[in-house]
Image (cartoon, rainbow, N blue to C red; front, side, top):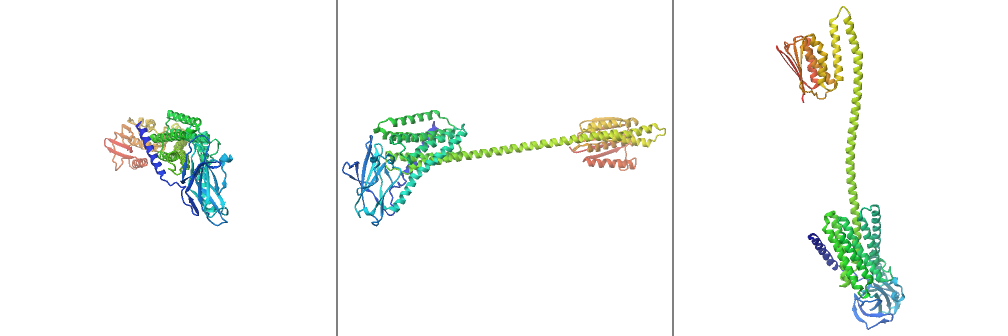
Length: 611
């Protein structure tokens, strides 16, 4: 509740300040025009079809007369005197920038504009919203003392009012008349057209997005505003002027109520009871306007208009109290425009019912302008927000597309790697089969042939057996995959005959699966050749009786209990030196380190690589 009271007080304070500033604006209908005389002194009397009903009284323009009320038409006459201006063959114009409600002009008894309340031309009756002009040839005028009679008529609930009159050369005054027509009637027509078109566009948008009631209430407020603007364009839609005023005031109230519903939809604040109460009071007031006697009609119009002005103040209060529900810029623009429209309406209400001409009459045309600007702002803001949401959604979709594209690319790469690995595996199997059935078969046949001969060549047989073991080592490096521990086990099996032949015991200590960086068939074969060379040297050159093979995650070692050798002078001469050199070269190719220690109690070869 404190928040609502503070919002109401802030809204009321701003509206009162703006209303006071509006009252300081110049009236605009009491200015001097070049080439024309401004007439302000007149004689006023109530009149009928035959003329004044009583003696005229002097008045100063602007002058307003409020009839006592009741049905029927009330008429009055303003008589003014003017001198002829210009040459005798020229034309003089009489220009009335503002009057109320219907007008008839006579100069020296010659009627220039007929009286619509006497001729029955009711469509030309209510001309309070536009200026009037009449021309008379200078030849029919006297040099001085010409009499200008301005007859005005209005319903019992309308004021009779006349503002300063201008008499002068026809050309400049006709130009001023056109300007005033554009300012008053033209502006009203532009307002009516814009609000009607904008309302139709918003209604069409709502028909395509019916779930968003914001656009429905905005369209309804626009069409109600179009009915209000129509009052300044064609105020004679109904010949029964009281019915038309009732309809016009109801449209103004409906415009404010629909705007209240729009604000509630914008802020997502239901406030159903408040809106229903406002609607009930609105409809009850419209019914009272239609049913009350004519004597009370004008007073109740003032009360009814004050009611929907207060409803507009309630709408501003709701907008301020729940302003966090919308963008700060959107709130600032809407609050400013709605507060300006309400201030203009309050100034016109005070000027119409209490203090005549307290505010310029042109401000009444600015009320629809403020609403149209708010309407255009809402359309622009919603469009900008939709574009921003679209851009955010597009960016999010693009991010998702990029992520999915990267995932798809990774999937393609994995599939390509799998296909390539499968092709390599198939090629490995083919090579294994060729080696086993081709070269391996031939080596076995040659060994069988040598075994069958009575004269055996021990050197050739040893070479063939070594070649067969070497081929088996290559097959194991391809067939066993990336497990070094498995391939060491296969190597042990292939070297068992040598161990048996030389009576060597093998101690096997695999503490962990060795992981050689970048290991593949070629790298694994290189590692196995180093291990094989170390084992062969221990068996054939060191006279070892026990060989210990140890393996960890980052190293493999081969240790024996042989007699050792001098690292600077290998025991077996040139062949052993070549073997050690080959082992170091292969270790370097693997990016590993080869450490060899030897003494009279044995030799230890350690192959290690970084983790």
